[in-house]
Image 1 (tube, rainbow over the protein chains, first blue to last red):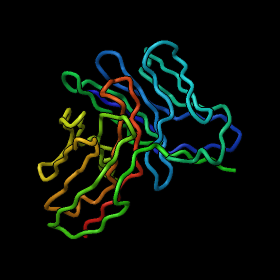
Image 2 (image 1 turned 90 degrees about the vertical axis):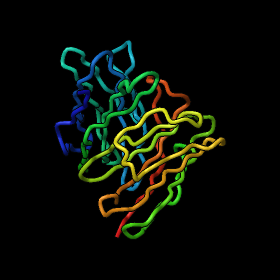
Image 3 (image 1 turned 120 degrees about the horizontal axis):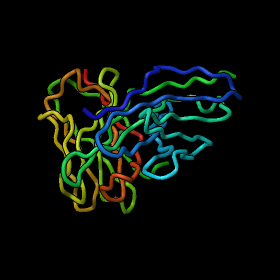
Image 4 (image 1 turned 30 degrees about the horizontal axis):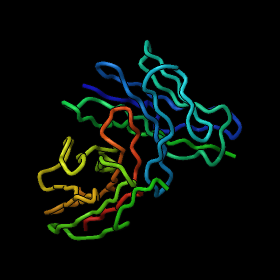
Length: 116
Length: 114
């Protein structure tokens, strides 16, 4: 079965420190991977995606993610965390669903808490 | 602001009732997706429409149905509501139906079934 896993329910980091939010995937074929962020009482916002090419993908708000095929991972990173980065982060993989259709499968989400 | 609008923002209703959630996609987007977010199930894909036609079905109950109209807005109909249907329902849109495209999410409709 095709899936995506976020092994940490919560990540705590001090402001100014680097942060990593982990994601691993299991798909057949080439994965199309996405990161979304959800602030309280808001919809999901797109951060970045990996389709092909360079394994290091840069996205919004200073976030980046590293695609690692051998480890089937797509971890989200930021060199210096801000308190305003505190939110719920979702990793997602786009899978074939038959023919031209496809759907996003989301991980369970990781709550990032950045302490001042 | 993603450009995707959803109404209403909140909905409180009773078991057995029927409700309709509405979504307007970003200007020019042809695909609309519906998702359900709940504490126990997480974010689950329900259904996708592309240019008025159903494209994919996910974990959507038979009591639920959706449609996309010629002006591309979409409605999700939930009937014979149960307590377990209480959740946040998101609509998302994308330009076409390509695997490479990111989806843009609306703010959601919070449904509470009492």
